[in-house]
Image 1 (cartoon, rainbow, N blue to C red):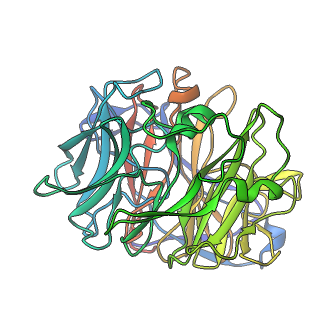
Image 2: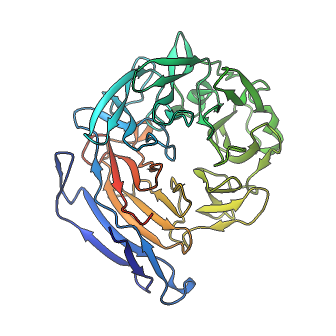
Image 3: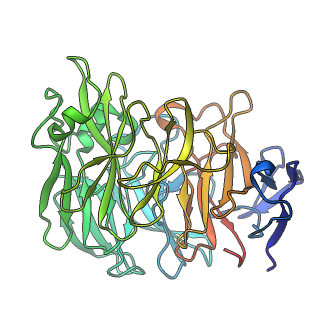
Length: 436
């Protein structure tokens, strides 16, 4: 398949498809999905005649069936594909317009991309609409083993399963928030504390001690979890960051959320936040707990994120304390760079392709039309290709909203996302062609 060859010009170029198309036996009207390709860039910052070779994306394909709600079984940016790219991890549920709790088991399963059939594996009671059950494929056996969170015997745990035999290999007495690239370590945080502070990211059931009466607990925070032994070690306590974060009122609670290992696994990113005001501070630390660093100056905050490599990190943040943007920088340096030349100045869920050549990001629903958009950016030129826009029904909001939450396949030739534009929560894949 030939790539899209686009010459950067002074005007935006749009090619829109308004005709209906077929996805997984369902005809989707063009007014619900508008698939369009465009390049948008600040031409004054590009040399005349620059040519950007974008992939030639195919229309999104719905890989889950209507009748039940479906979502990827993990947060955005986390690989949902087996290494051979045949299977993806999916959650299936009947819950639609409310917050799930421990009495709402969801079915964790696989979609076989050769048949688009859903293969149920097990049920989990530790899940939410934002991050699923944090299912990860383990690189120790990337076509067979997954790890996911569950609520068992009044405790949040993580379970390692062989997806082909459906045998549970091991139950670990801690939930996972991120898994290291080596598949042998994970980060664990307090999901009960999250339920009290950031409800839509925690789990129901009081499976951990939330320590909700302690503002900055010394024995809670960021744990490094050994997936082989099941042992966890506290590497950064919440108390440890007290002097590095904004002051909170007497009734406030500090908490940790949103963790991610760097590409090589040597560093960990996370957000420290608080209630009643969010007061976000972005941090990194070495996997052994050394070299704790704030990412930004005061008032920059931080929201969504991805590692480009082991030293460079992208965070959507309040750039210069004035404008939200996708900000790329080197750990320990102040070489902050706004990506997208002004076109991506908002809070999106950006994530890099496996080869680092592209960044895909999304938008929240727009006011009025409630359109959610997907953009692909070339990291070399920062030219931006529009991959689609999807109208979210107004019934999907609050704790049961549906963010697009893009993720890459291991080979970088597919992008998956969640959407509700047909009236139910379903999962879609865009095939990018061979120029990725």
